[in-house]
Length: 267
Image 1 (cartoon, rainbow, N blue to C red):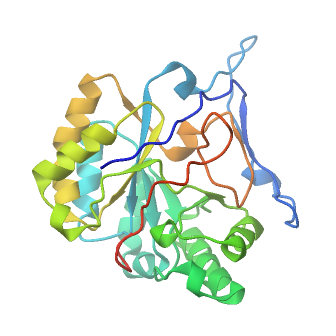
Image 2 (image 1 turned 30 degrees about the vertical axis):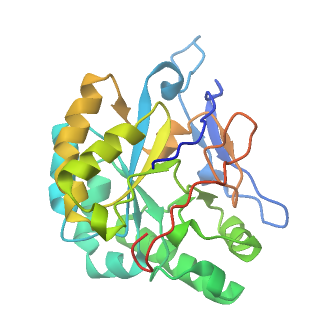
Image 3 (image 1 turned 135 degrees about the vertical axis):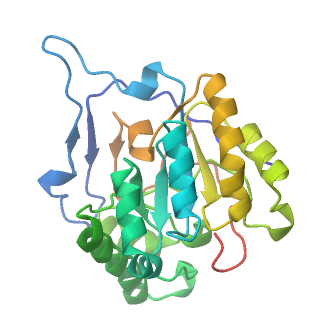
């Protein structure tokens, strides 16, 4: 069963700012992104007035990246790719192509361990080495992070905050990490059922059937009036605190009943 979070309406603020969590250093000035409005007009976040959805793809870059990028381009869709440092090292050109396509890169650790099994020093190395390589490869420093399996604890949260990253666990998942679900028709239906205004959909570009399902998913959702945006675009206008998870529900808290965990190395 696909489980959903309740997503809040985005506030009509003109900036996206990463603020320091307790004990963390203040974020540098270049983490502030200002939405420019026409003279005399108030800037309104795009997704406050449009039906947005953020498609996210984990574990790449992979052999499926080029096909996925071509499909996204065909449907004028933007997405967020949570990449692994080890695969960025293996596929630097594909990583650059993701950015050239206008998509967003997020950090998904170097080697996809369960971070809750690691020491703070090991957690820091997994995330920081990935940050440095993405910056070196693309010139872009990620501001978003997704923990493998969605597994976090106080140590993970503290390291993520120190590295000035907001956490994006996803609000719904197609569960393509379950091998028995890796069927194009099943995953197409799963994605369409998961879709909702302001949803953050968790998928894996390493799953061929997920990539093959995208033409039908994108064409159907486009007809339903959806705009395919990056996670940062979806959260535009909100103030993000490093180490905390987004998007939050109407109470300001994340629901904790969804389980996005799967086999090691697959989520």
